[in-house]
Image 1 (spheres, helix red, strand yellow):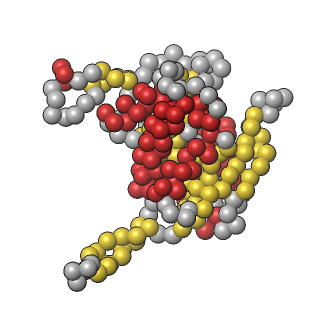
Image 2 (tube, helix red, strand yellow):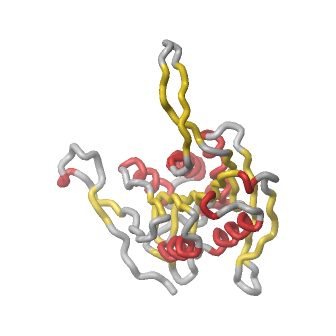
Amino acid sequence: MASNSQPPSQTVGPEYRPAGLKPIATVSTPLSQKNVHILPQTPQLIALLTMIRDRNTGRADFIFYSNRIIRLLVEEGLNHLPVVGQEVSTPVGRSYAGVKFEGKICGVSIMRAGESMEQGLRDCCRSVRIGKILIQRDEETSKPKLYYDKLPEDIADRWVLLLDPMLATGGSALMAIEVLRSRGVPEDRILFLNLIASPEGAKNFADRFPKVRVVTAFVDAGLDEKNWIVPGLGDFGDRFYTM
């Protein structure tokens, strides 16, 4: 059923400017689920999202600005990984009490749109291993069906960053979590990185797997009668790879 909810709006701009000099922009719909983290609705993020939502944005610009958002998502996702203390010596002979990540990580992309997020992960994590899962909707049952998966052999011992830019109904993402669980990955060691989600899909996903953390850039107004995210940005995979 199509959603008729209206997305929230607020003034957007630097804090030093008075409200009357800042534009009103649509911002993310808040969610009550504690395991869903929405990126701060900063002027930079809203400007980047505006560019990729615009139907007149060409493929080259769509890729460039999408990659900017993906980088923000990966950086924030890494903030949710546990760390342990590590003390190092600096070149001037002093000690510094710092931290390092606890355990190994890997990325898993839900093909094909999720593959667009792999480079952003590689840019932040050198030599990171990346697995792939292909899930498509069965034309007869209209339900997601697993067609292919290739994952690191030791994935059960890693923290997994699951990659998919769009979360509509959540069917593919839910099945991807089941695949990871079947390979021995605990739910609390999975982070799902996502650009734009519907409130229906995000709530369903978060309620189904409360130990999986979701990091998303934006929760949109809802789904239309075709289960497209609205206002959305169209088919992410098509705009990134072919249009």
